[in-house]
Amino acid sequence: MKFNFKIVISILLIITVSIFILFIIKKNINVNQNKNSVLKIVERNKFNMTSKKVLLNNGVEMPIIGLGTWQLTGNVVENSVYTAIKNGYRLIDTAYWYGNEENVGASVRRAISDGLVTRKELFITTKLPPYGFSDYEKAIDDCNERLGLGYIDLMLIHQSGSDEKKLYRAIENKIDEGVVKTLGISNYYTKEAFDDITSDAKIMPAVIQNENHIYYNDKEFQEYVGKYGIIIESYYPLGGRGHTNDSLNNDIINNIAKKYNKTPAEIILRWHIQSMFIVIPGSSNENHIKENINIFDFELTDEEMNRINILNTGKRYENW
Figure 1 (cartoon, rainbow, N blue to C red):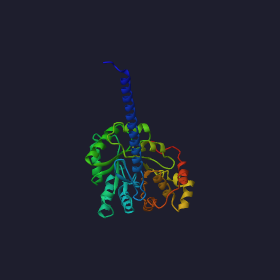
Figure 2 (cartoon, rainbow, N blue to C red):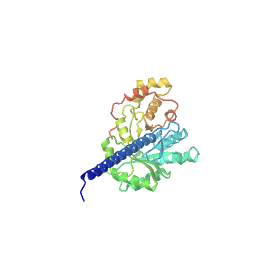
Figure 3 (cartoon, rainbow, N blue to C red):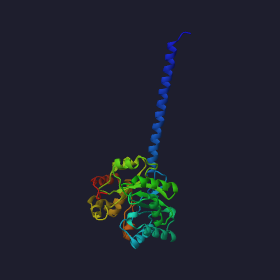
């Protein structure tokens, strides 16, 4: 039988074209899937100013404003937490290092007992350092026991350290057990540090809690981790103890405050949430606690947001 090269070449050409078409179709499907994923992340990260919550990348809703309790202890922290809950706060932030987890838990249980709120409506955050423990799963259980609230809504690695990967794995395991609902990290400021801590993660962080205020806010880092649906949470939202006057006395902030008949603190906190930063201002002053959550009845314009954005110096107050 005579071999027909023309037929063979035609068949090969058809096969080649078919493969190319399939490649283009698959590429378009992947592009559309990626676009859909991005859209889902954007939608997930959208702050709801009515519910005052944001949907995290693990499907859990987190309040976008809460009470920080650093340097608050004993009756002071118990009264502050109770006052906060009474005035609408649903996010309370504590840490092993703060030495007040038991007090925070006692105050929350009192608020629940008094009918102010249910446990399900609250979001309790605590943190552990990645060193100083031989058994990190037990350390997490101990935090949960001190709080006495059944489970921990968000467990953060307080900062980088020698055992950060061990603590990360321990938090993942405790999520599997239901002891912890959400995993996060704190004081991680660079792409390299973030990539390293998450290099072999089974569960990506949902929250990164960092120093963040009008003079330091890394929008480039926010955008980078935002690809994973991660939200930045601001500690020191008003500059932190010893530095609040730097922020509250700023002329730009005060001029905007006069326009809206608001305090400088309210303007700054509103800027945070419009920038998609969760905020946890700390205070033991009842009036300040009430004031700090009074930020949902006005909206800063794009021009006002930009005026505040340019205050960024790129320099943090702390170096941990």
